[in-house]
Image: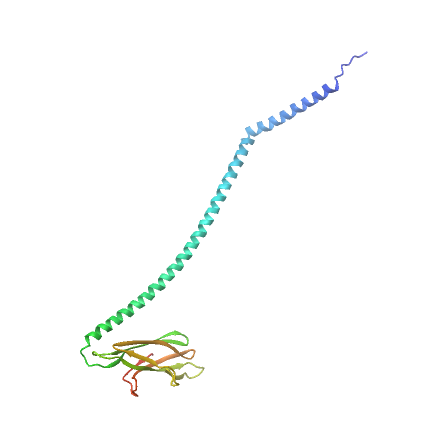
Length: 232
């Protein structure tokens, strides 16, 4: 007859749980132990991940700041280019104005030096410059020598010769400014000198070949002064 000592169910369950805990602990200890000897510890990996995430956040912030700064610099550069273009244009305008003032000063100096000479009307300067395909800018300077006591009153008449290149032989045309149709004349009223400027409207593609300016005194049929400019 055999005698068996059977364990109660609660004890059996406790032993099974203890055995599972021991097995699990041994597995976990072996995994962590392998990480240590393999130089890849879980806590170190977590620290590395945290460091990389912090670096990524810092670099993202720096990238946003650099992008904002780049946009500001691009905006400043665009403003700078616009300012430079404006200043360049202003310098060119001032240079042209300065050259004109110097020219007028030289003329006034000559006018003063000629004040004792016999009075007379003359056209000292006549220029014409193309501004567009069908527009030319003209400038006329009418002066009086000597020492006049009163104002000169009269008007200017411009005769403009143009050449239009056609399909065959070039065609020549002559314009009168102002046209002889009762239009308002180019009035003159001055004591020493007067500058007259304006635009010549010519046919598209036409080239001004010559301009003749005549200065008439009011009531006179014959010009008091004449000057012709040839534009080759």
